[in-house]
Image (tube, rainbow, N blue to C red; front, top):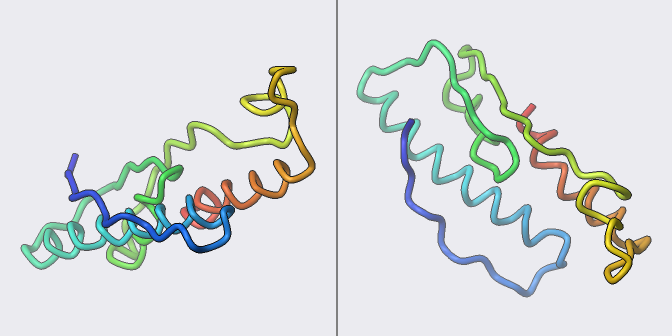
Length: 111
């Protein structure tokens, strides 16, 4: 397991759907820095295991293109059920479906 520094704070001026995606890209960039360091030191992993939900796995293949990656795809968001629309106090909206589609793109891009 390799730690990485937290990314700089994100701007809040963009579209709200993209704020989480921007944070994921920033995390992925921080991970790339660590991966480049270990690669420059001669290390080549046999396998990379990563969680794709927060962006850490986005750019692994850009550093280790030929290394297998196992993703711990813990959660995939759906427009109904799961953590959306289960509480009558916070009903799901049509906008939630659109927002969650974007939220899942980090996992899709990592795959």
